[in-house]
Image (cartoon, rainbow, N blue to C red; front, side, top):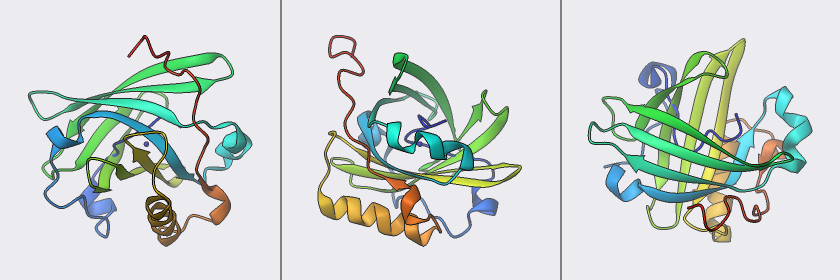
Length: 182
């Protein structure tokens, strides 16, 4: 849900996160398309200096015939608009995926925890790397989501043990990606 790890996350999800269930009756085709990461909860110490620099990022979820997913993310950075592509592999549980992080050389888990498909999605990302790291992201179909959805996201992040200062709702990115490129 890196800071661009969007919409998905995974490892041995059922063993690691027995208490986190994916969206009931998850439908990948309905989940496909454009999403904006409009909320992020992340408490990694290395992320602290970047908290005030984060902008809402955009992602495009493309389902593949085998049930896997391609995710393209665009992030506004000091170096400009950067795009990255991720391939999420389906698991036996709909709404749960895994992917291999080349940055960390490890498999990560992604669970779509809650979505109504038309307005918002809450996604949990998990990895064990020196210690256990979890990230919760709020995605919207537009760069602005309703306040009740933001409050629901914040309540979920707090329930997962995130301190309030690690729960962000970044401002929209301007022209990233450029409107002609997507």
